Image (cartoon, rainbow, N blue to C red; front, top):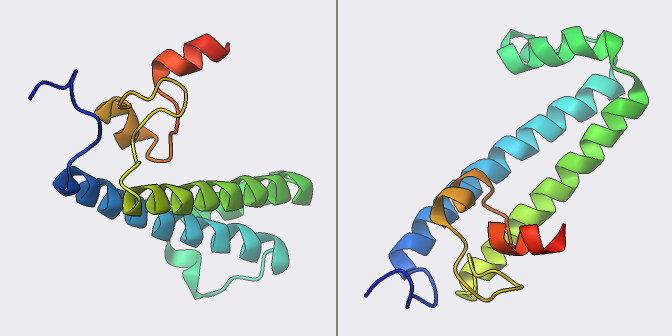
Length: 127
């Protein structure tokens, strides 16, 4: 069965994507917490200040305005929502199918953007 005739990803493949997405959700949630705590307790060092991402956030947070921080948090929340929607598509076995062309989205693209609902092809049409 060639990729051309494939209508959807196999359950085994879907499971792999599910693991990837769940990992990304965990990381995104952690990042969101960092963003929130960065602008909640401005400069109040918790125990987390040993983590390198927190350091980077902290050094940046002095130059980064609360507005920018809020924007980032909003984007992060949307990202988490998109990832959760992707999990629903995995349950429905519709994951990885382009919503415009109905073809399978390239695996490499999904590995990079696991919540993608458009193939590169469709993205180019939309430009």
